[in-house]
Length: 418
Image (tube, rainbow, N blue to C red):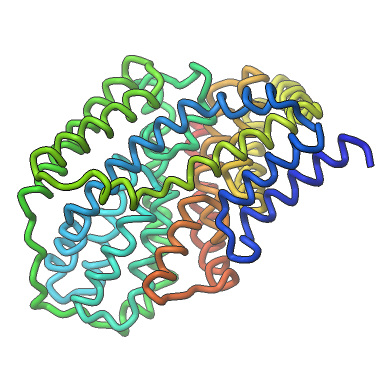
């Protein structure tokens, strides 16, 4: 077996392990195992492997900062309060409750990233549904899964994948980001809402919501966390507007905010740090090594050349096709490796902003088709299991097809005509 075949084989098995999690091992173990095998068999040298890991520095810093902020807000009860506000203002109407939870999901995704929506908003919505005596909470929990991806390209900070696609100093300033993604994001959010509500309308109509739900009180520490998050969002928007990389500002904002709130509330830092999903970091690092090894086989060079040739001949069709292909691929191998490969090819080909934007939409929105499409959806599924709830892969895909396909088509169409 030659080196090329072995590299592709290990990369494929790594992606399969991340998606299916054999032996109930976490996704990070399979990603790191793939990286170790590539180095162990001499398919990539230690120096090149480290270079691959180092390429993700901005992503690691971004993830650490966002995870600290999200966990702080969760522990202080900010998400429980947000979810309870939705159920309280529903006033006994399941339709109104659906709309309000969707709105909360949009806000959390936009300003705290899609992973925060999956990890910390999902259990808060479940608790709120129990308080509202909802018999079937699944329609409201599905909101957390779908909006986590559908609203994840409103801002650069809404999804770590955005840093991968527009990495290496190519992140557009905020003004240009809005010019390209404001309308496609709006189309994604609206179409996702309409399609998701349509799929859940019979369950919602048959259910009831208690009209006397008591709102969860907002504690002083939760208010502090909320103000800190708003301040952090302003800092990150400023950094994006000034065309700075977002990793370091996010990391510093997360550390400073967490330290300030813990100092004021006099709580232990250990309690906050131990519940952060640190396994995400080795997962991403392992995938960067796998992609670096694939890059050594010439995969990304071939993709970049093909993308460049097609873009010269028919830029509009290339953008649409790239977005659709990446969306499908994200569901086959998960959007993290798909995003890393696609992002590398886009950067190497010096693709136009429109093509890069279509690829980003495919990476961000495409995973709404399946439960293994994105890290956020996998984390959402894990959050459900902690509450004793299950949803089958086929059941999710049937809903995902109805929801994702029209949203993707609408977003890419809006991007094309801008």
